[in-house]
Image 1 (cartoon, rainbow, N blue to C red):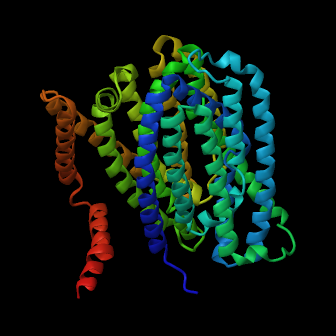
Image 2 (image 1 turned 135 degrees about the vertical axis):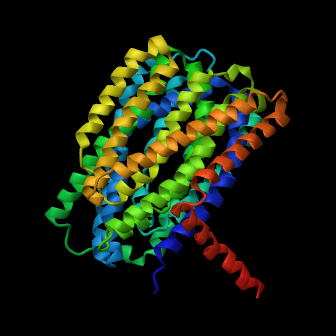
Image 3 (image 1 turned 90 degrees about the horizontal axis):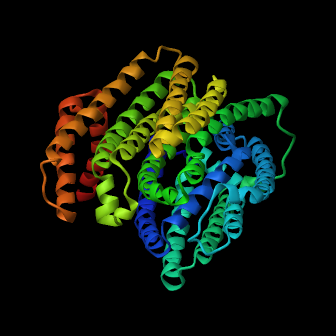
Length: 515
């Protein structure tokens, strides 16, 4: 059977992923709106807090997924089905152990809940709600080991298809439950049921698609292969611990020092950001396996660096525009267009929130490349240092500066891990100096600032209110961005590449159909 090219796989992954996600995006936004209006900020805060707690407890899985996927690249490329089966069987045992560990640790947290949250307007038992979240987190690992095979085989669009379809149906059912019953327990039970359903459907598909999984396994993994898996997993654990410290502790600090209501208020802003961020990340995650497949081929360093720069260019193009718009318009959207002034956050908090998003987002192509190339264990100690420093800074900054202090601590500590990622890729992957990458990064940061400055100066003169004024502001930001973008990047090699790619993949195809 003829294998599909990396480019075709990447395009298929991206197209299907985006189509499914956009459909889910619309329905999930409607569902969140109904949730916010029917149940209020404290329920949102409860959800954010419990999710943070269980993210921390999920450390047993930290880094494992990326490492497992990476170790499947070569046997899949070599069509070594027995080796694939050996890894899959091992992954099954590991994920079953992870489910058990999370359940035990999660139950151990129950006596301490009263010290972490006070929610007088929540009518249900906090223990009951927490147990529901614990069940959801634990069951999310059911059959997940089979998904790693699809991801490694450049078929992540299949995972996305099942995920977004089940999420779409789930959100429709949740909207009905909220409107009819206004009951959080019923609402969340649907999350658990559809989460399990998604994993079961993926598992059935994988079993039918990869018939060799039913073959009798011969032999076992070598000591070296097991050691390599342990080494890479340990390295990834360090990076994921840092990630959990950055994103998994803020709601705990806000709940303990500021109030559970503010977790809910902030969550509406972060929900919008997460929806946008997830949509773009899905594009790059869908082509990770293509890079990994390229990374195990010969003489791949130069090719992989070229792919990285192309990914960075398109990623920075999208996120610079998005972040300029969010810095200027996010507060107005939440308080005037979507909800009301009860969910107000200061411009300072929003600016820091979006800057952190921008730095994290334009770094994603490099992080994806590092994972795809299997560079998991280099400089892992710096990630632990960054994680510890983040918690220390959270304690220091939360009282005098509140939410802004927590977000600023995250920017500082994430910056450390970003630099480590860049140095690791260039030293161990490309074997050259990272100076050109740092110059590129600085160039885009300056471009972001200039776009924001000019757009904001013009928008401040707009006196039109409500939806019409909001649309006019979007148009101004878009026009300013496009003009500056064309001036700065219109004749670059990267721009020429994507113009040619568009012509080859879409325009020529249309001409053929017309003929």
